[in-house]
Length: 201
Image 1: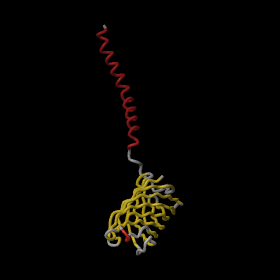
Image 2: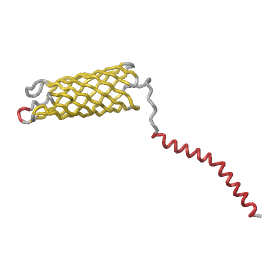
Image 3: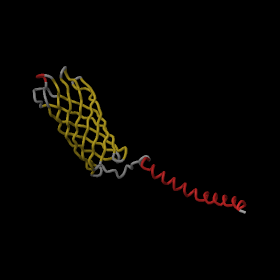
Image 4: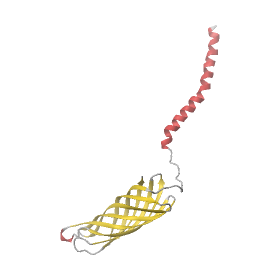
């Protein structure tokens, strides 16, 4: 009698397992989906509602095409703050840039620091701006030909765009003029083109 009922019991267990399998499968899919959610591609930013107000830090990489007949790469970091008034943006920044440009034998440009303000307009994910301010240049040379540290001004034009939430890419052309060196030296003009990756918070 038990042998006759055994197939019936097996069939009953199989039907029960088959009935609960979809629920178990759906629960598993939900758990897997939740686990993978942080790795999904971020949602596309909307042009409307982007606020440029806040602090930012960034890294730059660029090129100085012609400084007294010399050219070479530049790289550095910057820190800034902006306020979004709606369509108009204004802010300030501090930037440190390294470069090794040989002007004459034994004389080279080492680094410069810029402190200034910028202002422009907001077109959603994009910001177009102009900048200006004060800059200090550090030089390296041997003996008495070293003019030492010089100071001057800079003006620039730039563009910045959100590519992800809190992350922007930027491009900027800057023209600087340095004078007032520690030792007598002719005015020095430096033009640079640089691209930046910035984190805004």
